[in-house]
Image (cartoon, rainbow over all chains, first blue to last red; front, side, top):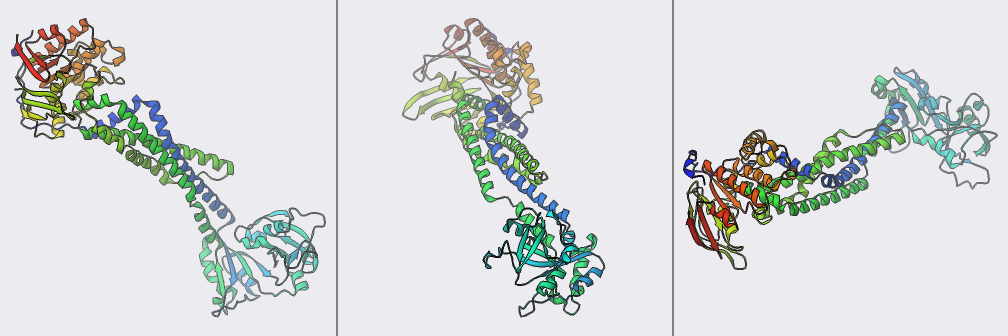
Length: 412
Length: 222
């Protein structure tokens, strides 16, 4: 046969051995190729991760949507409502607001409107005189001006609020909670309640006053009636103030002095929307239990990936042997399987993000809430998939690297 | 010398001795057929020549380097650059085209895919498969598959080509073609060591080594 003397001269051999190399780009290509070869298997094992991450994204998304909804509700009620209440003296006794407080506040610059309620002490409401006096249902009685719902931004569930007629006759309006306790769902006919030893006609039921829920468990009567029948003190127990939206803080700072110029320290001014916003923030904190369930799903997904990768390593002994023969180091082999596992779970993370966002969207649509998925989830979902995949791939990758490189020669 | 074996011993756990003191020198460009019955240690000798396994004793030089002191990473580098394997079972990747299978042979040299594909196309031309570049292994005949595998082994222009029963899965006609191709490709100076059962194939080689029970029992030059 051919003689070797015809061979062209070869370049002289280098004295050192060139190392085997696998650039990152080639590693990525190799891993993707490996996954594409087994698409169905890859898709099924990524599904576990997708469900886990999807569950967590949904938990976060649903909480964020609920929070956004509450904030929107607060915004629609207005963040410019301020409440003025009597504080306590240095020794702990209750202060009182002067009876001039409401007219003074109404004239303060930047105040749009003000409404006061006056607590009627030692008077309770019952469905009938036969109810034992101790069973008050926790309902208080307040005298109020007829502009209270307007200032609070509260609507009526049924009937109307106190009006000119209510100043003459024993009529009352129930807060949402009070109506529920008294088991009154609708006004009409001659529906009456027994209030301070007198029958009062119920003329209206209010919806819940989100900005001050203490009004919900109250029955309201008019100021003249309260004055006439119960000798009501003329000192307001709470004054609700609407300030100009762009000067809420300025108005707030001056309110105490306006309400009681002689004893401004005895006046407390607060902004209920602040407390509500804090509550909304708390609502945005997803429940730990649900997150835990998502984490369990994620763990199961990770085990699924590890399992599939172990099987894959056993099936691909021939390929691993071939790659070793072609110059792959142990490290090249382990990085290949590690990369496959990480990319698989990364794709699962992206699918999970889509699943979770979809679930949040369905929830938001069904509850008429705004659709919100926090921005960090867009990064965290694929990133955590990648990390979980890398961890799940550690054992299979180490196993692949340990396989004998003579495998390719043995199997035919 | 392309390959030097000096009193090489290979023992497996449990005391099985696959090689019991094998010595031979294979100069650059030599073409050697290794024959012998099953279990005579042919394949073990080839895996040691190909640095896939280390000898239990004796000295092994591959492409002029004593490999006893080389790290696993250095041995992998040696395989990546200097050694080409041809297997009985082809070991082509089913999901890759012929071109990409050949390009895979140079993956661990660190060259970019584009360059490897170019070299692969030239190698496929040399084995007469330029019309099968984009075919998957399933679409190729057995002889064509082995020619793709040969192209993969020689594309990086290795110093040494090691072939283990490359015709074992082929009929005699395509087997003959594969052997002729190996001879032809070795004309560019590569050293060829080939294991075979087939006396006729062995006879076509300028040098034949006979093995039995882990020892060399004959080394003839025709």
